[in-house]
Amino acid sequence: MSGRTTALTPPADAGPPVRHPEAPAPGEVIGAHYENCFGCGAGVPHGLHLEVRAGEGVAVTAEFRVKEAHQGAPGLAHGGVLATALDETLGSLNWLTRVIAVTGRLETDFLLPVPVDSVLYLEAEAVAVHHRKIYCTATGRLGGPEGPVAVRADAVFIEVKVEHFINHGRPAEINAALADPDQVKVVRAFEVNP
Ligand SMILES: CCCCC/C=C\C/C=C\C/C=C\C/C=C\CCCC(=O)SCCNC(=O)CCNC(=O)[C@H](O)C(C)(C)COP(=O)(O)OP(=O)(O)OC[C@H]1O[C@@H](n2cnc3c(N)ncnc32)[C@H](O)[C@@H]1OP(=O)(O)O
Image (cartoon, rainbow, N blue to C red; front, side):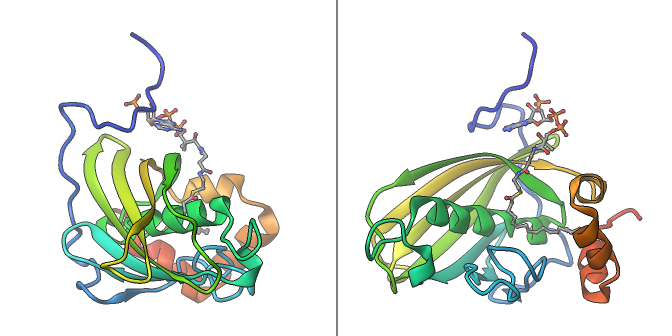
């Protein structure tokens, strides 16, 4: 066998995800990783402005209120926006492992329509790690933690170095990010072995 596998099921020799000793405490709000992130940044007027909280183990929760700017059909959230909310919540698991990782694969099920103004209660959990691959899963419930599951996703994130962004991002934004002390603080938090 050769070539990469993008399967969403961890291989038999995958290990458990490990919570970093300095991970935010359960219940603590995890700040935005980048001010101009469409998922979590305060600097994006029509962004999702997701507020993510650390959970127990390697898990997080988040809330997303659907706005008019997020519509696909009249009065309903766009599926791609909902996938983004799941992706962002899953990406926030990085903060608990202190591993920078990007989405390699995201498989989403849309189970119920999600109206504008509703609040999607999101939960994400890392389930296994195999070398650079992190297997994780997320749900979005309508209205609150006890609401019906409207969307769900399974994903594989791939660990990368900070150079991934520096080498591929548009220089204007990369240079601005590297000149911003708050952003540099975020990057430092991920430098386990500087
Ligand atoms: C200076 C400013 C820095 C700012 C940022 C700083 C810090 C960030 C901190 C915190 C972040 C916190 C939160 C983030 C929250 C949310 C963000 C949302 C997440 C996203 O929205 S992020 C954007 C979308 N995302 C991409 O933009 C990825 C584009 N893509 C690539 O950049 C490459 O494609 C890459 C790197 C993925 C792999 O490339 P590569 O060459 O490094 O790896 P390679 O091919 O060797 O594969 C190695 C092993 O991964 C497996 N593998 C590969 N590809 C796979 C796939 N697609 N699916 C499943 N498995 C896959 C192989 O099968 C092999 O596994 P095996 O060895 O077992 O076969």
